[in-house]
Figure 1 (cartoon, rainbow, N blue to C red):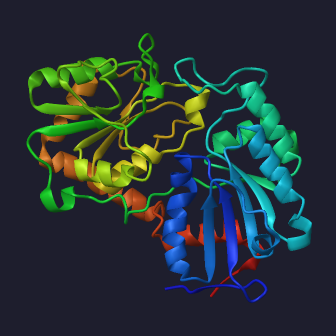
Figure 2 (figure 1 turned 90 degrees about the vertical axis):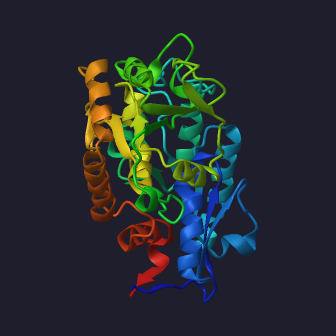
Length: 365
């Protein structure tokens, strides 16, 4: 096992992340949980709702990160942190995990997404942030290209750091209990993926295919939210919304046999990460996801394209009632996580994280 030695004025080195809400759990809070234990007090990742601007803290800081800067307050945080970075030697970074800014003079957010903030206003806010930031962290190459296109000054200053899964939080209960004869299907997306009048990411065969499967009586289907949305209200199990801290435990214990990831072909979705896929890999559920150019789910083993019919999708999911078939898919997914170092417990993933946030203050022996 590699030992990580971090030195900075013979004191603890910190990374401060300004919390942006639920998304920060995936990007930073879960990493803080894992790495603060691994580093055993030598280094700390501090995630806070407002930045720690006192001189003592900043004098022991390697990187200050402002996540999802979509308000003028976020811009103020970046400027305030930048004022002292020359004195104390830390970096100021901005983390972006969605395309929430205008692109080529257009609104890139799909009409069915209920994100309320004006992307043109967000673009101006990010412009002001980047005047003071040393770099940007994004989740994938497509989002990197969008940032480069909109913010030319950030070319060469963008780091792609995808999402990872903590397998100590996302657990595979199938490993002990196996897959039953009745197949449980879950849709883990939020209500901003569709509206009452617009199927949004559920466009295509998804709604009709689930209806076909529900009518057989051999499948259960669960969705999170206040109602069943476009699905059959009588046959669909509606689960209450779960906060980000509880999500790993809740979805693990639900132990669905099949986890669906519907996405419509849209630039907004090309900027998304493959988080739902790797969650599914970790909890031992067969993942069925949308496929298109630059789809975040292109590495999944069961694809749905714009040409897939409802009957074809229903038949594909029905085939997973065969234990051998579903276990083969789950095994491939487990190998994908392992060989691509997509877990936070992976030493290669941990090294990437530490180099990203502790940069020059890090020495790995």
